Image 1 (cartoon, rainbow, N blue to C red):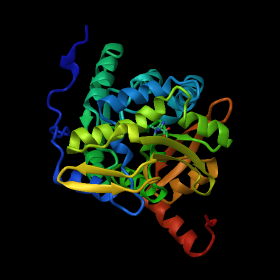
Image 2 (image 1 turned 60 degrees about the vertical axis):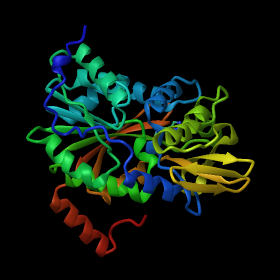
Image 3 (image 1 turned 120 degrees about the vertical axis):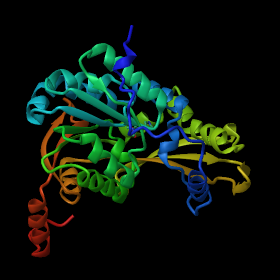
Length: 350
Ligand code: AVJ
């Protein structure tokens, strides 16, 4: 039996569960009626979507999760040594307890685990499992949106508190954001944390197109169901009437952007009721639902350096398909040096 009393009751970070707000409605409506209709990938993850994503991670074609676990198993000890004496782990997107469960045994001094997720179901499952496996650990689940840069700045400041925290951001989730937004997020996280704070970041790497596309368009159709579930989620949440049967799953590698793009496409014209609004889609129209950026070491190095972090270490699986990157929050002196280097043209161009 789990002792749920160990889940702290005085979690002053956890916002109450809100009904869909006007701000959220406006955001989604604006995306859907834009020239290139799009929806933020955060709307994948209602409770059904989180369960479907778990199913994706078990597909033979979807390699990232297995690669990441392989890295933690093969190099966990060294990763733990490089992270040093940490007293708290803050995980962005709790997802499942699998990854953190393999990291914690290598972090002997950690007393507190603070997962952040928009799915209450995922938070609870992770928290309960960890409390069961690590009885000494204090678990503080936080229902919040780690893609909200300003909220996260404040939150990280408080979550790290006086602890020597490590930020853990696995799963290549950062790759879901447009490059500029990913940079803004990393910068925001840096500003909420003290210099020297480590960030262990899981990133998926560039590889041949066939491997990438198969991972995002599996023959069993689980990823297609995951993609379409976003419309079901919007229907429920915002009182819409998307007809799921009318929308096809599409996943393609776009080399120019170094990313997999997922779309939902309709072959027939659609008129969709969305709250009080109506949205029309022409035959062949698409809704862009996700980007999944892929990196290599130089591109990640550049991303880190321009956002207040330094890339200190890097571990991959045997095939070199996925990486755990150890970034360290720069001190302000380092930042000043880098700016000077940029201004004098010493910094290598992007
Ligand atoms: C959760 C962002 C890591 O981009 O690989 C999986 C989401 N989308 N299949 C990814 C996802 C389609 C996933 N991440």
